[in-house]
Length: 143
Image (cartoon, rainbow, N blue to C red; front, side):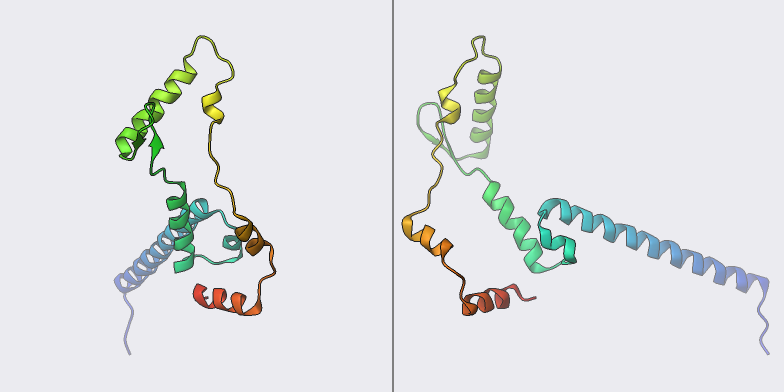
């Protein structure tokens, strides 16, 4: 019959303690990762448990692409496309409007061309979705 020594028991206890600490660290890392993606995505379906899917990451990447500024018009009407030029133009623009000695109606702030939908695009958005379209969309999501 094998006898368990105090040293063996101590080693087993230490291994169990190390394993518990390791599992706790993994859990904390996974919770931090989930919080990170929740903050990036902010979509309702996140609340229902869809955590780490290709679709989820795709939403975050698409939002980043949509929010990226690819070009702006400079003071002389020339389009600026380089990140550094765009950044410098924003700095100059906001420095000018924030340090003006005579604030007023700054027409330049509201001179923005917002994209509009064509009549066909509007009708397409207003029509009822067909079962085949829903099925195709769900199939593409690879749930």
